Length: 284
Length: 284
Image 1 (cartoon, chains in turn red, cyan):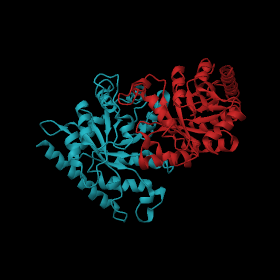
Image 2 (cartoon, rainbow over the protein chains, first blue to last red):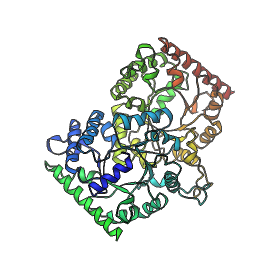
Image 3 (cartoon, rainbow over the protein chains, first blue to last red):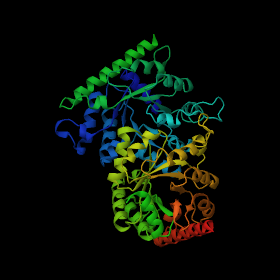
Image 4 (cartoon, each protein chain N blue to C red):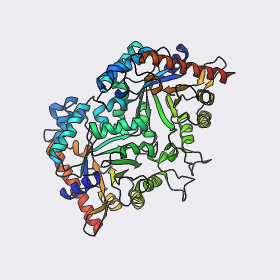
């Protein structure tokens, strides 16, 4: 099953737009695990167990594993999710960006070594930095498009003088991702949650691409604007322009006590429900 | 000693502008090692032994290690270079690009886990994707600027409508890297070798930054144009605008036989000498 179909299935089965990001920081682990990088797998597996029926996807961030020499634990975690939550697609957040045989090596790392269903990429080097990943026809490829950090303005917001209509860089990127770059129909885009008007603009230019949206907090405070701007559904309520709303720390570190997994579940449930309430409101 | 000083010392000691890129591909290993990912360290160490007195830097490309679950061999290799070639700075080619605590994890991976002297980064997310690396005040940070692949035109060549003079994106990036972004004086830029006029343009906008230039072949065919466009020296012949010219496969796979290390040395020597001849011609 390809990534887009996996997403649609998980959205339906779990009635969820929520992605739980797995960014393990041993310094924030509960109780006796605090500071122990050897517990990265155990911590993440407990979060997976506690939330796997509530999510549209999991998103491990590889930097948190690499900094702690924990690639073996990431391998175990990916295998664990495949085994215990086979309905949940896994996005490896790696933001790789290279070309040619180097890109082939990174694709092999993401899709063969770690068995990810999708990977995030940085498009700075252009289409031929994306193309090697597209050779894995069923895999999702999620491009940075418009990020909400201050430096997101440095390049992504620049208007392109020589492109008709002088779109901003992120607008031109969204258009190309929806059209000529989307060879397998498995492309998606990263769009930050801070500026709903920009989510809406990306959605306008890329009507069917899944949007991976980081930055919605535990309280779901900005959930409504995010969902309204990004989600498109057909008459039956099925999404034709899906969104994947990521929450990491608010879920992972909801409690520093032995109840961390239950607390993570409570926050994930509340966030999922806030997103669904926003979604119901948006459909009315 | 900071990265810029390490570079200057290696350039002087080894009379070299050549960087040997360590992109190990087990399928290209010689003789009995062919196809054996367990020999990645041994292969790279043999290349280091054979070329360490001929280079300004080594540049391991992390993707080639990650694809083969060989992070442990990369750790050993980095330690080996530090021990046996302490005069040669090591650039970890990773092209990371993320923000906040994720960027901190990647910086920790590059500078603490692997003990790299410099790392390559992708600047798509803007200055705050660079800043966490600058907290390591002596370390080099090498930004993608203008790459020679076809997709390098997709964004890097775009003229920016709202910046005075409508520079191309790579021009504006070179300017910012030379000025406001260069807080520790340890920034450098990646500029492809294919278009010497663009190297010259980057050099004009970033007169003192080291330029890491991939794409010069074994024959040194384009060495002269590259050196002429990129290298700036003072009256004594010391470089004030250094270049680091990378060659990977032409050196690593100069022979598929048991003489691979000697063959690598021959090619490295010929490439170094071609670069030096071009440098002498450029100074006349």
